Length: 283
Image (cartoon, rainbow, N blue to C red; front, side):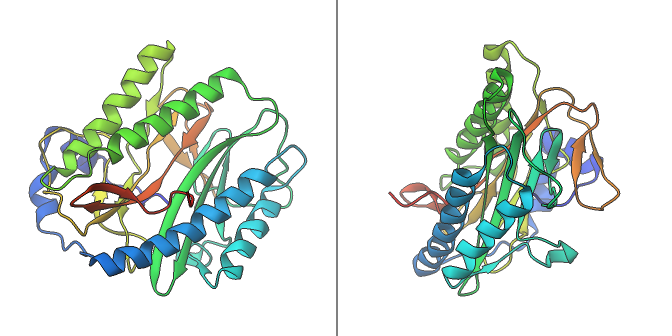
């Protein structure tokens, strides 16, 4: 689940490196190797829930159906859905369809149609540790532009993940996400909006922890990355504007111009051996 909207001034400061001093003063939860293993167990629950939802997502299925499937997988694993009841959120996953960017609320009346694009964000708590990940699914016969948008968003996520190495900077992660998104837009001959009002976050004994991880930024800026940090990296790209609006339900974020959006996320540990994706499916 993306962190809450940040003030525009903070987003701008991330671009020029002014965020660095504020980030350094935040307390970041560090994990031992054993605690990272516990987070991997939670991450596997999230991966299994997302795999089940991916298998079920087809025309005629409602987003409430997907929510029930995910909750069943989570509870069968002895875990608890992170999102259910979080600040009043009423469901176990977020399902954001077409122009919805993040935090869409599953509903029985929201039935997926052929060609829909749906981003599914899922979190689980196991033995006190959180996992959080998101995928974007192409329902039925995909539109080529949606395939390209989702692929670009996923590539931007992995570009950011690659920067999660000891001694690196938080700004390196943000910069890599931004640059890969722009590179893919140029290669695809398309315009992709990078949603800067929402971003990744620290994760561990709580779902949303410091630091905030912007999806735009300057390389070489921000706090130093150290082994034991765990961050959720989650870019959101649109097929048009980077401006968003929030619906009257107080949760669902949509593109201001009605363009479609994609969202990918993994929870990742910084280790001496490089980044370790904790929410990847079991190999």
